[in-house]
Length: 490
Image 1: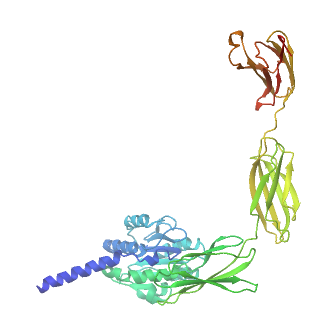
Image 2: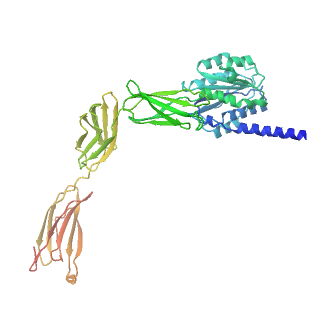
Image 3: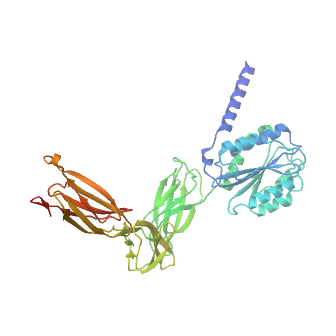
């Protein structure tokens, strides 16, 4: 009975341990930004089972982190006779991809040439953004790592934090000199079978190094600013207080309180072209947090509207606002046929907010850009597209109806010949068989060479119309009425 109870207790402990390992601390998901390079001992002194356990440990250790640029970048460099870069820092952007890569790593065997691998590591970690926190995590059995002191010292001098995990057999003094203080959280010597017990402590040590404790301006206008930060609180663990005021100008400090799950705030009603300082204070009764701060300068108040009006076939009026004579030196209007026409420029004084652009081509789209040169040297611009109207087509210049016979008339006309394609005629006709019915509308198209034609069977008081036809449409026509007087037309 006692043996049965003991087995139950052991089973419960194993289940609890498994549950602890699979839990993902939510606070680490979006907490950090930096580079973590795994320096993995893959030499022949590491047993196969030990090598697999180190890879599994690395998988669990890194699982909570968001990966990729702007988050945590992870690379893997193997130590053997010759170093092998299994994957670089920019390869994996999600946990599924990283875990699959770690599961497929093959052991190199061979000698433990850690010094050569550190030269590769130095190149990888120093070629990235120097302001980005960097971690070298050395996973080793610690057996004869070689002369690593000089390379480790250079890495640390370049801002790289060195952490190490040794599976008991290692030379503790060599490891002690290699890692970055504090030793109690950056150096671990543990039996491979119990390596999971250091997971949380080591992860917390990494988070402290790469935690993105900064307040960033992610959007800025002349009257507003959006600030963003990595969350360090939860809804029920505290709140944030944001305070801000303008630098160099007398005025009260503005304060706002935000919930613990906030990660951004928009500051509004700011003054244009003004430098502000903002501070974010995470308040919690569980621990103390650093105050984050940032300075920013709002944009110069630029143009907010550009419009077009009075559009004709050869002109467009352009207007803009708001008018800022005190802050603007001059306005420049650039315009040209879109997409590749000649660009023309008009320079205007700061008191003017519109101009008439003339000499344009009919039926053409123009790109118009209005730029405001401010007195502080900054320039703001806005662009619009505008279309001129189609040019009015020439109208028929003359039309005559000459009576010929009963119900017949000779029609003569004159028109502008440039671009002319032909003429369109229409009239009311009526034959002897249809005298008692309503007259019908007849029409006829004639070529551009025609100047006259004879029409028969005109209805009494028939209206005869002639319109010139051009490639882009009909021009304005003329109409005359045929009058019947004692069997004749006039």
